[in-house]
Image 1 (cartoon, rainbow, N blue to C red):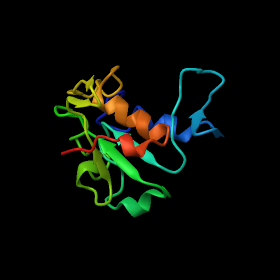
Image 2 (cartoon, rainbow, N blue to C red):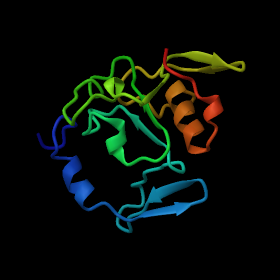
Image 3 (cartoon, one colour):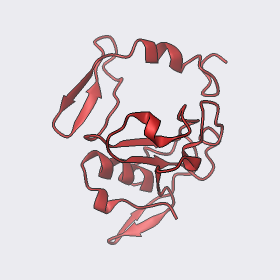
Length: 145
């Protein structure tokens, strides 16, 4: 399937050649000398999957994540519903669903993430949730209904 998110063509080579993970402060970043724009973030031992076409496991305990596991899924994200790489995170036990719909929190409007490309949109609920996990403010999470 080439570069499609519906197959292993795009992801498999990158996962085999994944650079070392460096931790600093509250997060970590993958750093590759030849591609300074490749970055993956985490917070301590928590993990967030968003727009995932499957986690490759059907049981959260098989993920080797010591903290919480969260998921964010946009309303019309066909990639997230594909399930081509294992269990849909929304059907996996012990994975906390975070909101992606439009909400107002403490007087601030957060927009809805509707499609697969919307998760990192400025002032979206999904981006707010990703940031809250990253900095350890899980008391500020907007949980999925």
